[in-house]
Length: 315
Image (cartoon, rainbow, N blue to C red; front, side, top):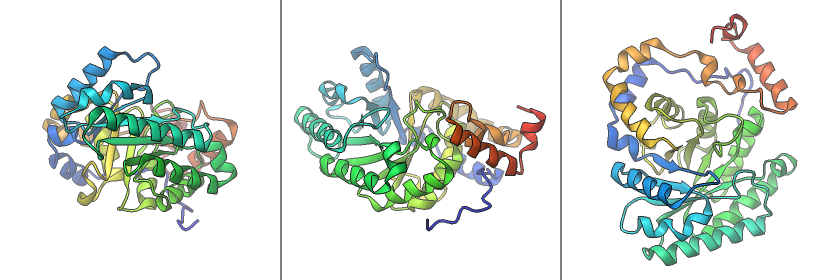
């Protein structure tokens, strides 16, 4: 691996002055422009799609993120708007063979274009990698990603690496693969993994892929402060603070936007209160992980300068 990870403190810290500057550079409309409004549940019905369209168009969100089956409805609902369609392929496990996954992508893109009739540039494709195959053969993952990008025919492709299923070393490795691939974004989670977006993972992904590609954070993001921490971790530089370089997947866009007003009004108090480090650290969320990853997390916790929180059970 080209990236040095030895002796790395397993936390992103949030300097008060830098966070305050970041928060003050945003308003409600700018916050909304990063949001992929998401519903990937099995029982999503037409009325929920219509509600999501109302949210996304009124707030001016980036996209609406759904399962591919909704391609028969969503393009028609979004025609004439600036809101993109996002379809998540092979959700949530990523275990379909490459050729079938690529065919699903090709068919979805084709159908969306036929219905929306607005040409290219209105679709995002989020793909879930086969984590098991990645661990056995990283070259498989590069082939898988590039096949999906080819099938997407020039549309934006985001690669979901399911970071909660990876060791830190594996996260660096898979991020390097995404960086070498034809994909446009790397994304941490399906939102249905053992845990969701953690600043540490978002920072690692940004460090590895650089500034040319985008980072998307997803999973458990339901308020403006959480979004700002993830923004700081993955798009600290102002040149990265646009929807082409950073996105947030959320099922609660109204809560994020409405809580931002409160956050901006009380920024000093909120930032002074701080946060318990374990609550934004991936190694704290290990109870649902298999033994290999639990052991890995325990070692990280033992080496962490904040491990007194765990010893004293202060959270």
